[in-house]
Length: 76
Image (cartoon, rainbow, N blue to C red):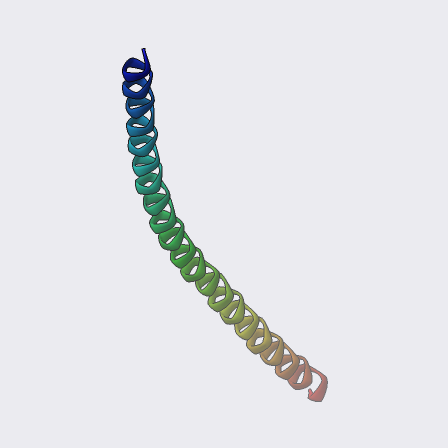
């Protein structure tokens, strides 16, 4: 009886060790995916920032041109 119980406990321990190993692999995979997603997110945020900055520059340039045109109209 004791041998059967010990054998059963040994099997359960081995199963738990295997499950822990699988979970550790999944954690490592998810951490890797998370790092990749964070990198992609940073790239996208930089692209958005650059786009907004470019748009602001265009708007500033257009406003300057309109101001110059208005001044020319007023001068006439």
